Length: 244
Image (cartoon, rainbow, N blue to C red; front, side, top):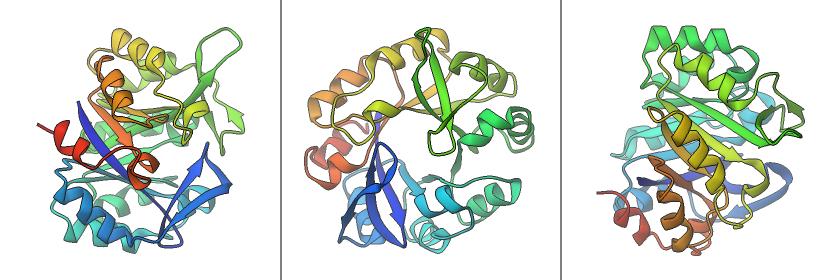
């Protein structure tokens, strides 16, 4: 497992949201490129960059910053937020991203994303699915700012995408996002047990080095950490420790 530092962008600045709520934003003074350099120097093997403006309103609000990070930092970048068309996907790849995270479209237009996987190959796309427990105990993806539930449960959706070669999954337990409440171990164990071929990235709830160690026991391939690194709850030395 590797630690994947996250950089969330809004208006060209580094921010973090609690549980995806734009009204609960934490702003940081560090420049995005300087932060990416810090993580690269600390040994990051992959950096996760999210365009929160595009996620909310579409467009290319922070594409220039993303392109700068991709061109000036010698570490692969995966990026998401607001990818709503093939043009959006292509622009991120043209900006230099190694992989593009696709969220809502995986839920609402699964066959279209499957076609993109067929055309571009599985290493270019990450399915980014944000989930909550359903009434029956299953995991249900949510979209539209987490206000709507998808039709298919998580594992039905993954089965459909994996038929097109999906390899990379970024999965967040919404209740834990930005809350330092610990990773959703049950969720990641279930995914890794049921879909052992997937390379799963855990996201949400990390607040300490002990949390990183606990999520590593689930056999995920990566652990995304954002706010905990920014606020020194997790030392940047953990990046190298988990990046052999």
